[in-house]
Length: 167
Image 1 (cartoon, one colour):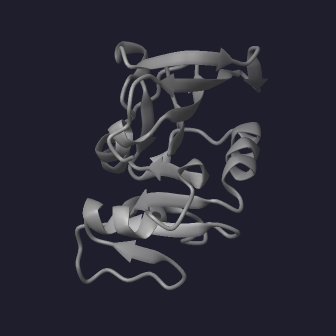
Image 2 (tube, one colour):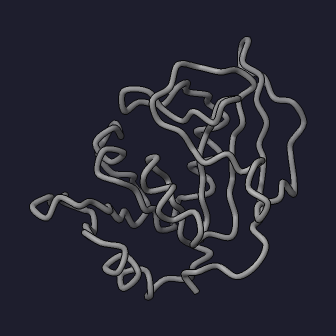
């Protein structure tokens, strides 16, 4: 499975259930990588999306709220239920898209992380795990410096060594 996120210099990913910054090329990259694929997110991430769900993708929402329902999405209430649901898909077609608790729960299950790394630290209340500090994760590619107005950022790809727990 894959992780995909945009993170600032301190690995912040959000504040008050919103992205820290919207960069058009990052949004385009996210759309290109996930369209036609399976996206797994938490309830609050789904609620933060402009249309509630992402068109052209299979949306799976992981939430502890047993009463939660979302039209057009598959809702699961445990990691075991998520595993059962994802068994029908190629793991390479699955993208974990947030938020913080979902990333942390599924980090060990994933083999690739696509991170848009922003060279600035914003005020954040949600964080992605610092892959640069985790020995099993290796930065394998990094784009040239990108800019959007005064924002400097890089497209990074990390790979995890060893066996993933999910498989």
